[in-house]
Structures are given as C-alpha cells and as structure tokens.
Length: 485
Ligand code: MSP
Image (cartoon, rainbow, N blue to C red; front, side):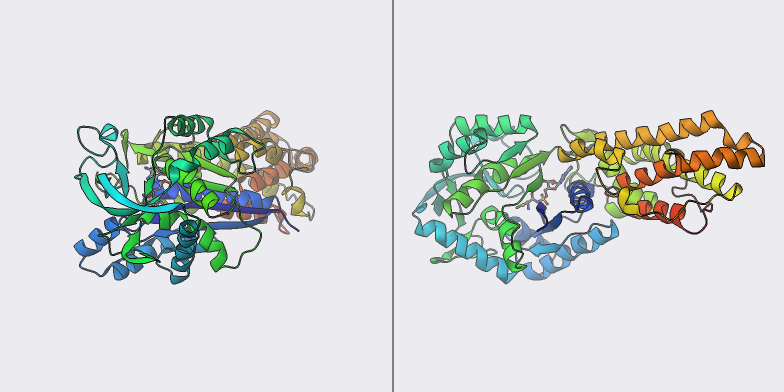
C-alpha cells in the first residue's frame, strides 16, 4: 500500500477575503503536497473555511446578510481563488457543514463523558478579532497586540471549561520524548522552545463554550451554550477525513499554519485529541508572516495584496514561484510588488525562461532531436540528482533553499552554453558538437531534470518544458516568462 501523507492549511475566517497571507500558506501546502505525490505517496490535502463565532456574525450583520448567507458568499471567494493558483486540494471543508458539526458534537461529548469538562464562571478579556482570551499581561497599551484597532471585551459568564491544565505534563513529555506514544514535532525548533517554555510556566483550563454567541454549534448536553469557535474549528482536520471516508490518513502528517495560531495547534488541539482518545498529529509547522513595510498585512490596516493582482501580473506559476521564494519560514518576510517584479525578471524571465529559449533555439537551428524518453527517470529521487539534493530542504519546508539549489543548476547550464558557444560553430561542426551537448548529460537532460524539480512549484511550466523537449521536433516557443516592467 502507498505511503499516506495528510497535509492541511488553517481553515480561513470568512470575515476577510483571500489575500497573499492566506495564499502563502496554501501555496506552500500545495507545493509540499505535490512533492509528496511526485515521490509516489498517497496524498490528502485539506483546506477550507472557519465560519462560526462572534467575528463572522458581526461581519454578516455589517453586510446585512444572515450569517449563513454571508458565509456562503465569502467561503466561495476562497473556494474560487485556489484553482486559479492551480492549488489541487482534495477537499474544501466548511465548518457549517452539518456533517462536520456532528463530528464536533460527538468529540466534545466524548471528552465530557470522560470527565474533562466542567462548568464554572469565566471572567476575563476577549479579543473578537483573534477569537481568544487574553490576560492583562498579554495586552499592549490595553489593546490586543494583533488587533490594536479593536476594543478588547470584558466577559463574565458561566462557561464550560476543558481541563487543559491536567494535560500539561503529558504534553511536555509528548513534545520532548521521541519515544512517547503521543510524540509530535513542533517546528521550526525555536517555535517548539516557545511552546515548551509557555507550557512549563503553567497553563490554566480553557473556556470552550459561549453563552451569548448564537452563531455556533450547540453544546450537545446544554443547548443554551454554543461551542467555542476554536474548539469547533480545530476538529475540521479530523472531521474532513470522516466526511470523505478517507481511511488511513489519520494522524495528520503536517498542519501547516501561521505562527499566531501555534498555541491552538500545538497545545490545545493535542490535549483535545488525547482527551478524546484519538492519536495526535505528527508535526505542526508554524511559519512567520508576510509583511508590507514591516506591518502585518490585514484588512483592517488596508495594506492587502490580492492573489488575483499577482496572477494578473506574474501569471499563475510566476505567482507560485514568488510566493515560494519569499516563504517566511523562520522570520517575517517583507514583500511587495517592486520586489516581486525584480525577482520575476531576474529568476524567471532572464533565468529559467531565457535558458529554455536558448536550448530550444539551438536545437531548432540545428534540427536536433531528442530520442523518445520515459520521463519517469526525471521524476525519481534515485535518478534525478537535482531532486535528490532538494529533498532534505523540502522536508524541512525550506522552500527558498530548495529553489536556490534548482537555480544553481539553471545557472550552471547557462554558463556551460556560454563556455561552449555552440552557436558560433559551422553547421556540421555544430551538429557534431551539439549532438554531444544534447545527448550528453548537459542541456536537454539537464533541462528535463530541472523541469521535474520545479514541478511542485510551477506545475504548468514544468509540463510545458517537458512537452517542448520530448515532442517529435524541438522548436522555439513563445517566452515562458515575458519580461515585466
Ligand atoms: N480560522 C483561523 C484558523 C483556524 S484553523 C483550525 C484563522 N483564520 S485566518 O483567516 O485568520 O487565517 C490565519 C492564517 O492565514 C495564518 O495562520 C496564516 O496561515 C495565514 N496568514 C494570514 N496572514 C498572513 C500573513 N500576513 N503572512 C503569512 N501568512 C498569514 O486564524
């Protein structure tokens, strides 16, 4: 049986339309999913939208729509944009799907029956923007650090609490001890240390219900309360597989998320799963943020770049490349159209695009053919040395480093042609020499190796290169990446 690989993105709130922050995570997840497919694994790639809670209800009200109508409308903007970026997810989950709601109720009921949920009074601070509680110490100038424009709410109500504190020693052991049956990875390692030190500093129980947020899933044993939106949302990763009857994919191999939601994914989620007797995910990877002029992109700050703007300017694969090469793996990454345009022209128009045009022209002018070839040799780590050298980078989500390795091969082939100058040779000499160049391990073979290695990043471009160099006649084609001003 094929090795299974289950990768997820966060499910995005429908209070906002898609921007390149969301695109960053989803494109990265798609690249990872495609890479695992290339290696022959059976992949399930999940994304979707997070639709309950006070924040979404507020936005629906502003838009003069019922919450469900509002969710249907905005969720569709996410569902529609991903195929335009050639994102091949296997399922798009919505938390208002009744099948998801049923799984959430079953899971919370199981934890309640195990005795890990109790009722108590909650008094504290709540940020509707984050949909989470804060303590005074977390605030900056009395405001939520991520939503300085929003008022923080003071809440006091009877809630159901999950005994998160009980699981703290268990979680610490699960994170630290590779032999623990619940062991899971939190990466990059700095993020793991952050989580561990917070856990060791002590953690209280978690309020998991709301008395005054009707837009949510009812607590099964007490319909006067709804389930806290995060408790509901996290379960999507598990319910999606049940809905799809996708066997053998749990536990998830990778939850790819942004750093601001690490605590939910690396602590609360695992405690919930252990409490419900379900195994925990294998890895949670938290990336940093795309920033514009060192501010986080967000609707409230009005500095959002839409994925459609990028597609219009750079094309689908150009956009995917720019996102992957600026992936904020270890720290925030400043992005913007000027930077993207320079990078596009340097690496794609002048780099890969120009190289492909050069080799095609040489083959065309000298009427050279490449013998019929089984492309599978380029799609295997055993026989494609470029793939082999990017493997460890991709397994650590070092997307830019992987691209740098591929670009070393691109520059190497360019330099080889500069050295050989085959276009200066007489026709018969050229044929002889080019025959060697083409059939030797350089030019065309090398281009096909490059094509397979860029496939997860730029699937359409890879396909075009493969077609151009394996067809009955190698010809020049229009530029892969027209220069952009
Ligand atoms: N609904 C929750 C997630 C629930 S998952 C069970 C949520 N949604 S969100 O719409 O706010 O999306 C947050 C995620 O979007 C981040 O974790 C990150 O993956 C992505 N990004 C949003 N803005 C971003 C940047 N500026 N830069 C990079 N990614 C960011 O939180």
